Picture 1 (spheres, rainbow, N blue to C red):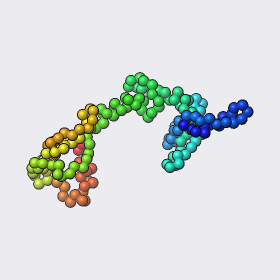
Picture 2 (tube, helix red, strand yellow):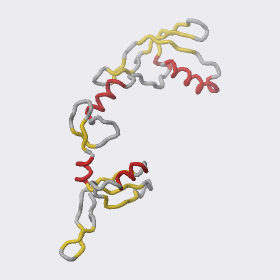
Picture 3 (tube, one colour):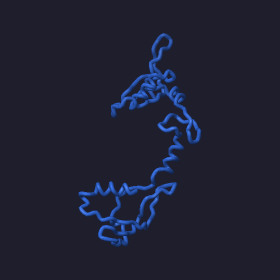
Picture 4 (tube, rainbow, N blue to C red):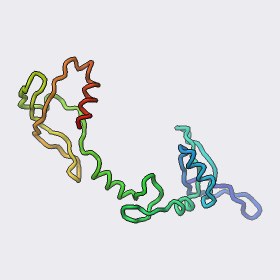
Length: 170
């Protein structure tokens, strides 16, 4: 809400009225040129966010919503412009079912029971709490999960290399 509102000419004088507006980040100059050259959208001006120093363009709310209404390619419902051509519910649904459900976490060594040596670098163990996994409703733990532990010598020097190698396995 723009408290002072835009400057309007009414009955031989200029007045200001509060106005609901859209503030659009100016992080893409191509998009900025497109807005400036669009005669269907009323642009009031430009502003700067004090704490971030980022610039925003001030656009009439009604014009913006009408011009940028589009139809979701998944459910055909109207949505306001976002980066993808999906409405928010379809986008969230996609992320929920298509993101990797694996969570990488720090595990205290005390969480492991029944540790057995397989060779001088590899051990099997039971992870008491078990890994987190998504059960289509929430994250839960798979208790008493059998896992493999890999001993890393000189881990102070090689932990970054080990993590890069381990993550690429998944």
